[in-house]
Amino acid sequence: MKTKRLALFVLSSLFVLTACGQSASNPSGEALEKITFVLDWTPNTNHTGLYVAKEKGYFEEQGLEVEIVQPSEDSASMLVASGKAQFGISAQDSLAANYASEKPLPITSVAAVLQHNTSGMMSRKGEGLNRPKGLEDTTYATWDSPVEQAMIENVMTKDGGDFTKVKLIPNNIVDEPLALKEKQADSIWVFYGWGGVAAEQAEVPIDYFYFKDLNPTFDYYTPVIIANDHFLADNEEVAKKFLQATKKGYEFAITSPEEAADALLKSAPELDKTLVYASQNWLADQYQADATQWGVIDPERWNSFYSWLGENQLVEKVIPENTGFTNDYLTE
Image 1 (cartoon, rainbow, N blue to C red):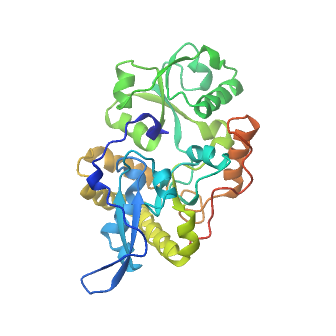
Image 2 (cartoon, helix red, strand yellow):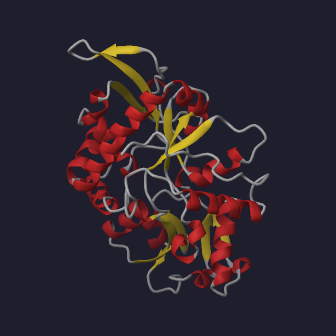
Image 3 (spheres, helix red, strand yellow):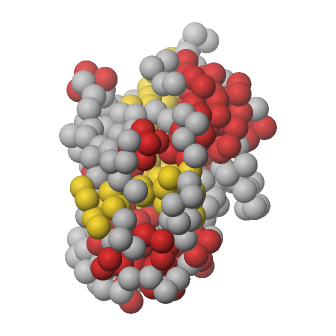
């Protein structure tokens, strides 16, 4: 959801898109299949496995030349759907409207970057906002998303709270720990692996609760790797090779987080090095967590969240079971 409140910026010259099927050559002269991967935002530790796979040569081992780019004016989903990129980053909640539409874009989630939803509510420590009911009569920085607010209302109601008593203010926050410290808002929805860790690094004492801990239905997949459906249909083996290399990159990030962080920082030196190392160490346990392997998507959890959206009329129409994801391109 962080991507919903930030303005996208990147020079179009950085976004040189290439169609799969074109070939390049490595120093040995072996032809490589070109793949374009578009991020959801600027590089961060959600993306580390991709940068590791590129830096360590895992993509090249699979016969692939992968270009990792940032989105321009269009979202990653739009760019992947149009075929300008073969793979990209999105999130299950962001994709819901697409799958509930009359003419959904041809995109499918093919791997979970993180196994569980690490998002939750961050607030200043000791002010009673460590539980949903505590949000009453306090300010919350909102993206004004119906799904976002419905989730907050759900956990507040379960805790005996009243969502109508929350004072909603526009979310134009970039630095969450600073915003809390300066009392720009009393609570902010963040992903702990970046926003929560940033607060630790800034020595801003916080309280935090995870939405998934309050309602298991909210343990949806975010972020996910998406792919163009036409590309998948025509290039099954290439897609499997791409995910095999990507999986290897994330597995390296799990076992060697600091070295993996170095790969990310090499490609994005503008990032705060201390924050990247801390975030990487925290996320090392989250990429695969309790799953049998990195990337796998549990149909029950996927379907549960989309069913909840339909039951609460948060999408145009009910999304059929098993819509929008597949584990078929992941290999053991």
